[in-house]
Length: 151
Image (cartoon, rainbow, N blue to C red):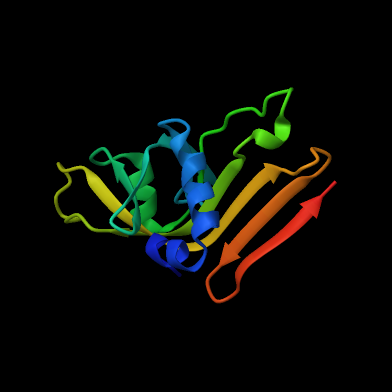
């Protein structure tokens, strides 16, 4: 697992492009696991600060309860459609996977929850130049950055 700071230090242009995808709108989507193992998706705000990726949640929210039970999660950036006149000018969309580490006192059920995310995967998908293919970049700890194309 890695911190956001480690990814930014190892692959600055990639990390900056990922952060730009998350900055296009305020709300992104988080996937957590319910107690029966089925997925739950929820809207959430993500924050890149102090070399970390942070998620904050209202007291006793179901997604916080999910993460306390099973810290695995996936996070999808807000989406914006590519323009018809320049699809390759689209920033793309980003996805992260990892584990949530609660940094607030878990006994304080009346307080908001704050989680630091230890990252296990980052993926950036965008339209290539010329705009006849997708470019998919993925980063994993210990493996680094890889790129592939899909037509």
